[in-house]
Image (cartoon, rainbow, N blue to C red):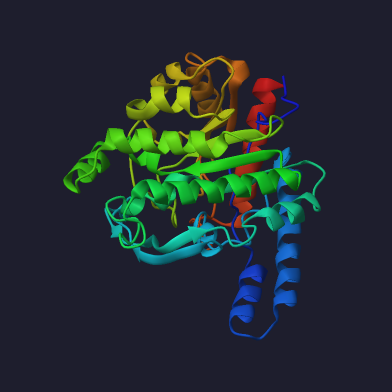
Length: 367
């Protein structure tokens, strides 16, 4: 039976490939050849097209493709006062064994919410669809884990608890503002907790003087704090991802190391779980999911163009249903198609085919 409210049986995670026209307009804007108003018009037109793509595929949850963001979480700290870039402690990997460094945020001043961070994105999206607008934000852990031994200038934050208090204040204010603007479907994108499932990452954390168990507990606690005041009629999802940058990743490993705490203590309605490859492990950790919580199975890869086998997708959903009842399961891609503006290694036609496949399989199983 199809779900009338989120999470829907066929879901989308968030980002979509940026169309060439939008990339061209952004380049013109950056070079000063068009003004902000002209770029805003181009951006809105591109989002209108992304909405149409999702609606044509049959999706009920609709995102703006994250077209107004440079990356899945860079926009958040760029619109928040107090951060600069510094090297991340972790690297991306690819199928050929390559490794890639990248910069992350570092608090060089007291952080504060200068203005609304994503509210304007929700308002614009809601004006372009009559279906359910879905907003995404990075989880708070993203502002700590990638430089967990030095996430901030110690002269500014000698007490890390003060850092967490400031960050939690930013999140609570932004979520409240989204609710006031009418947002009723919000997803937090959680990478560090997924990375802490990887034995190699856990070893690296220990080598750098950290405690994987303590970090897990802290990130769960902060999620509890920032979500404590959410409206009762707002559906909350938590998306677990092991890294998504130009079809690369940062970690591997099943959810077992964090599953019991994650599924039972994080106050969300649905868990969006990456399950598109062997790197995600098996479905046995789902036995910890309590009654009343939904699981959206990310079985369709956004990292490659190959279209998944419908029979294999049905088989895997049946396998997951051994641990969570079918009525509490749903289907989605494993991540966004463009967690950074450059996008993953497939084209828009292949992306649309994957979205249609999500809806087709969901309709067959749950209608």
